[in-house]
Length: 248
Length: 275
Image 1 (cartoon, rainbow over the protein chains, first blue to last red):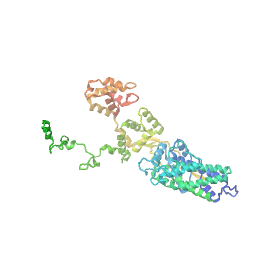
Image 2: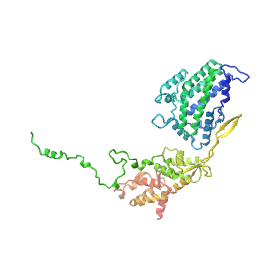
Image 3: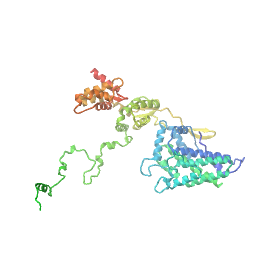
Image 4: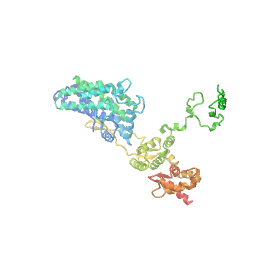
């Protein structure tokens, strides 16, 4: 597996993309190019969502070990994060699953009785005064998921404002946008991209950077430090991309 | 006014200003200071906790890897895992020459067959490694802790990527501090010390050991049937488990589904028979 470098694609998109443009021999992004970009974004969102959803398991570790990480993605945080992940995995020789599980627990679950013992991956914690779970943010995102025809799966037993669910939601919408573009339904694609932009501004961008800053503080391994850097860098890039797409 | 009875007069004797109902509970202030265990409560009217007098075992409960030297950390680890001594010593002994991870896991998994614990084999190795008793090395015993691999920088279709560097084969080797600790483990001397500490039970220890040395070992009931009625065990009353427990801690017997004599237990019996 190779992680796509997004620098060139994104730059091209922000300069030239306009939904519904037809193929242009001069290199202007086509609907198909944009669909491919959305698909790639969706993959990245799903990948990041998986990293935050639960501990690394054997299958994911094998996938991570087989992945090539871009040296120069166009975003400093992402570059640093990819290097940290590759370096950690290059030196994790004995029982990496256990060590990563321990660090996941330390970083995201914590063991204290206060609300400052870990980077709690819930929007409610970061947007409510008393850092409580299941607050207004959870109700808001749940309403948005439902308005998009999505319902949480029965196996998900914690709040719907978990960072993994929010990232996965963005991934689902990115895939839907790609599908709509390929089907020629540009209006729907634009609507989906607009929804992503609003969700990015109203939710992800409002709390995830602070949460990732806490992740760097609580995580011991450079793996999760790297995951935090890649996530923050990717969200920065994607927020800019969505803003440009909507403005175009 | 009613007539006073004899009982009233007796009660009057008690109900005086000098009567102290707690008199019987007054502690003797003249006790020898050496006989008193230090109290965590400081002297004084408020009985504030005295950190200096905190029992030693509470200090031992802190993480073993806070120890400054490997010797301290190893001793603290063993102190905190009293039921794992044999397993830890066996791991250390197995690592006397560099051993691949998979082989070491097999050795520990075999030991864990009759030692139910929540520790995974590699968790035990990790604990010993943190203590400084064993270390990850290459096949020649060179520590891998000093090796830090950079990811590989590769080019795919003109784009540069980081690729995870292949892991070297990891071996586990005994460190100097680990070897010193292993040298201090002398089951034969510990078994002999049992006999010296309670010479009146020497024959009982030997009987228990002989029963455990039979093929297939012996159950506690079988051992109890043989020794529990011995006159020497009647006052104070002792049962077979008392001796098996001591023999186990000395490394003479182990649980393998039955109580079985270890190689050290058998060697002691053999030496005892020759004498």
